Image (cartoon, rainbow, N blue to C red):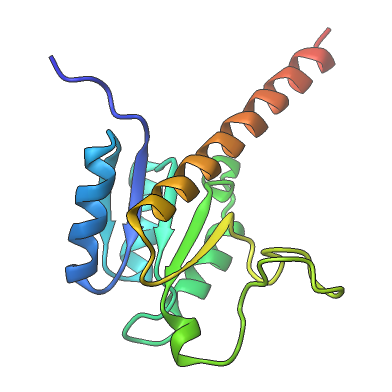
Length: 157
């Protein structure tokens, strides 16, 4: 009998050659992996599967689909979907001088304030770095959910 997966991770990436290594890495660590190759397919997978985390590419065939994915998910009417942690994994910083997500407070913006995601990794990212970010984001989500549950329990007393 096989163990239940640690969590379900949705990989939204238009390059199928990049999906397979991510799938293998995550499945080897006990995660269930589903994949989508576009913003629309990714959003549909979120609605259908309610993954525990999204690993997201930013640049896709029609431009900045990843950014639109983030903003659409963050405006979702369902709080459970709206709050799914997102880690952006992209090569955009190699091709653009723009920075879409500061990694530290720069006086104007806090870390990750540009885009409401839980992590931002530049491609190529090591397996260790990807796993570390996934585990960190899932632990933060779990801790946040536990606090919300405790707060709800207190308000019902």
